[in-house]
Amino acid sequence: MTTLACAYRHTLFGLIFAIVGIALGIYMASTHNHVQHVTHAHILLLGLVVSLLYASVLRLWMADQPASWLITAQLLLHQIGTLVVSAGLFALYGQLLAEPVLGPILGLGSLAVFGGMLLMLLLFVRAGRQVGATAPGAAPRAAELVGRRAG
Ligand code: HEM
Ligand code: HEM
Image (tube, rainbow, N blue to C red; front, side, top):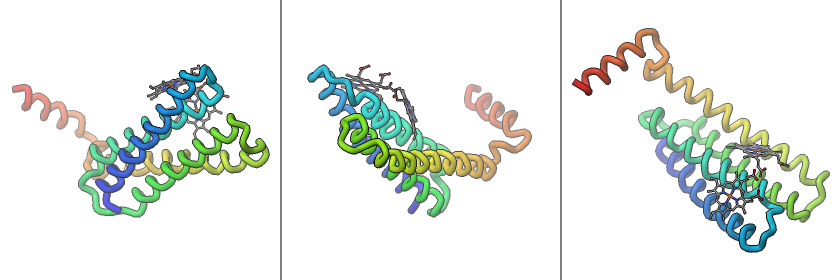
């Protein structure tokens, strides 16, 4: 999948998580039953906030890169992991399934989310090397550009 297609999907799934998370927030507020507040927090923070951060990093730093299975794997790890963690937390706090059943599911989901973050770190470092952002002299060059624009 291309970088832009992955960025689009992170944004789309992020906005879908936002609808679900905010709906849960409104439900909690209107029923005065806050038992799902941890689920609500993670649907919105992992689902909406982190997904949109990933989409922004892809657009800002990797937009010109060719299609890559690593970027696709990063998308899948984060989105599937977040879905598993969100559903698992909902079942845990709603007491729909027993903790011994949910423990391994939540563990796997968390590892997928963690793997997605680790992969994004690697991709970001690789992208930095490619554009020369980490090369010696990059900072003075950037300062020079800013100076030129200001002048
Ligand atoms: C109309 C939208 C929203 C409503 C009605 C709503 C409602 C709620 C309610 C009732 C709680 C439980 C408070 C408690 O028992 O402590 C809560 C907690 C929380 N909400 Fe929302 N929320 C909304 C949007 C959001 C958004 C957009 C985010 C993040 C991007 C967010 C992040 C959180 C977090 C992190 C907590 C946990 C705070 C804590 O308990 O430590 N909420 N929200
Ligand atoms: C897979 C990744 C994650 C796991 C396994 C995880 C796990 C947890 C756990 C076990 C708690 C304590 C819940 C309790 O009070 O009983 C918690 C709370 C919290 N986490 Fe996470 N977390 C993850 C990712 C994140 C991320 C990425 C953010 C922010 C961007 C975040 C923000 C929070 C907040 C704000 C709370 C307090 C929520 C509340 O009290 O309602 N977490 N998390």
